[in-house]
Amino acid sequence: GKGEYDHFMLKEIHEQPVSLSQAIEGRVDPARGRIALEEFGPATFEGVESVQLIACGTSYHAALYGSLALNRAGVRARALLANEYSVGAPPVDENTLVIAVSQSGETADTLNALRQASAEGAATLTVTNVVGSTAARVADETLFIRAGPEIGVAATKTFSSQAVMLVLLAQRIADDVRGGPGADLESLLTELSRMPAAIDDLLSSTNARSIARRYEGCQSYFFIGRGLGFPVALEGALKFKEITYDHAEGFASGELKHGPLALVTPETPVFAVFTGTEDEKTLKNAEEAQTRGAPVIAVCPDGHRAVDVADAHLEIPDTDSMLAGLFANVQLQLVSYHAARLLERPIDKPRNLAKSVTVE
Ligand code: F6R
Image 1: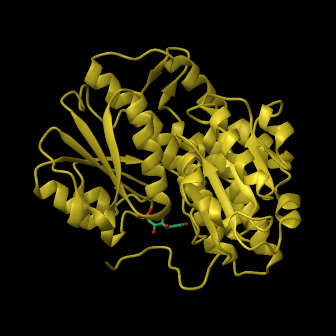
Image 2: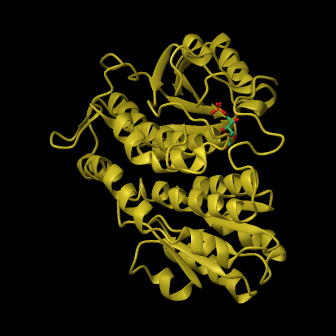
């Protein structure tokens, strides 16, 4: 049941410290600076030349996050929408690893793309939450995110676990390709092992409810981010539109001036996600919106330059830039939840949506 919570979504947001602990349990060893993904034999990914990540919706945002983690680790990777795969997938061969990211493991579009990639000779892997799911049976290899059942139609805790597992998997693939562990892994693993407690702190100190109240009734809600902040901006907007039914849109920060800026008014709050990568540029983009009257809500650590410029602040801890966006995502989940609550929406079961989309 929902226990002390009014909605499954809020319960699942609050479960993230536990679901992330479960995800990384036994899989990271910060003291020895190593990753242990025992489900894959030694050098499983040695011959991988490029990676395609396929998924839909929220899982696509996690896939995008994973593709950036892979690129940063020196492995060629792209995230692709599973429903576009049959009409425009880049060619694959036996040195291509295709990773299907699916919470349910039953999404028809994702399964179709996975089967296509497999038929064309790619190696396949699925990152899923559901043991015994179709994706787990179809793919050559499986990585379970161990988030536990998710009841709310809007995915929350499973996004965080997908992204964290893809960050780990990216390091492991890069290690196998390189033939040894990369630099900086120790600090990432240390921050990762602190993440559950740090999310707990964020959940107990968040001002997301007052932000939702302050910007209630606006015309549109924009979310911008760069690098790993971009998938977080897309996810922030998707969550917002799913459960509030208000218009929301996520943009790469730098894209704002290439068109969307025409929509910016005092009635379009802009949530700007700062992850520690080229933050000056993102701040400049946010200021361009602010100049047109839009309130800017900076999602960044305390003491960040953006705090002085912005109209409001959602705080995230000062952590590894690979993980900062995931904290920002939790703050944005909470803003969407509280905004939907003020509007008295049926948060756990938004109109027209189903938890698992098993038709094409
Ligand atoms: C959004 C949401 C959907 C799913 C998408 C893929 O909150 O839940 O966008 O992410 O339908 O589902 P899975 O991950 O089960 O393949």
